[in-house]
Length: 138
Image 1 (cartoon, rainbow, N blue to C red):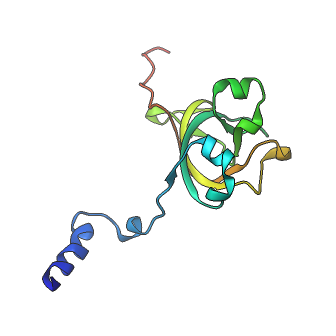
Image 2: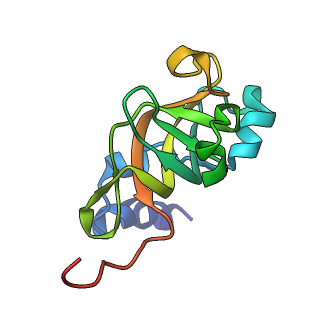
Image 3: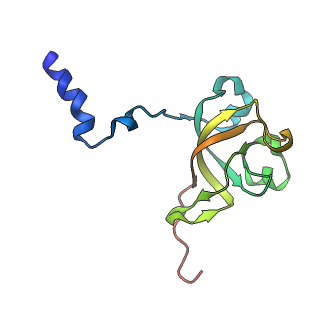
């Protein structure tokens, strides 16, 4: 057994995986419903979720549905400490469904306390599902 430990320990290095990547925190895959219903369970944790993202001055949020944004149902969403999201091809977008990774807190609730919580320390915000590139000429 001793002879296997060294090769197993060296495997990530041999595969080109940096040691810092192994130490990174893995986000919990959750839904907005889970975060809103049981915020104490996820307080301070890194989470990954999908929802409808809308970005504007003093109005950055991720919602359960597009309708929640359109009808100002902010309690069905979380404030996003974020200013841009990426779609496929690296273009920026301000409205659409997205996959977001960030740190959850219910102790802060965004601008004027209007949301059910907040995602900060955003690691990633990508369109969801990954959209195909737009047709040429658009």
